[in-house]
Image (cartoon, rainbow, N blue to C red; front, top):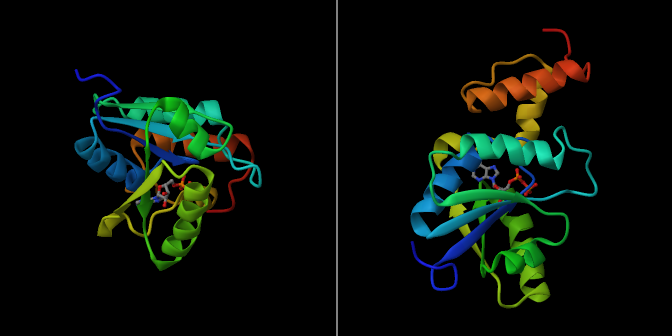
Length: 172
Ligand code: ADP
C-alpha cells in the first residue's frame, strides 16, 4: 500500500444524519478516484441531529465495509482543520441541484479563504439519487413511509427505531 504522504487522500465531509444511498454512491465513486477516502462526520451547531455523532460514525462504519480504502471519523471543529489534520488537501462533496450549487459554491469559497491549500472537488449526484436528502428521509420515516429503496437496510432499521424511541411517528 502506498504511504499517506505520497498517495492521494480526500475527505468527504458532511453531517450524514443518516447516511443514504446518494452519499454511498459518492463514496463508491470517490474511492475509485482517490487512493484513500476518509469520511468526516461533522456537527451542525444550528441543528439537533437525529443521531449523535458517534452513532452516525458507527452506522457509516457498518455500511462502508465493501470499500477497503475508505474509513470514517467524527470531527467537531472546522472541516478544513479536520482535512489538514488527516493530512489531505482535497475535500470531496456531492452536488444534487442548482440550490446545492449555490450553497456549496459559497461554502467552498469560504473554505478556500480559511485554508487556501485545500481544494473542494465535486461529484455530481447520479440521477436516481439526485432527489435524496437526509432531511426528506427523516420526514418519510416520521410518516411511516418505506425507506428501503433509499437506505441500506440497517440504516433504515436504525432510523425507524429512532423515530419510534422519540415518539415521533405520525399516524400512518
Ligand atoms: P451537509 O454536509 O450539508 O450537512 P449531508 O451530510 O446531507 O449535508 O451531505 C454531505 C455531502 O453529500 C454534501 O456535499 C451533499 O451535497 C452531498 N449529498 C447529499 N445528498 C446527496 C445525494 N443524494 N447525492 C449526492 N450527493 C449528496
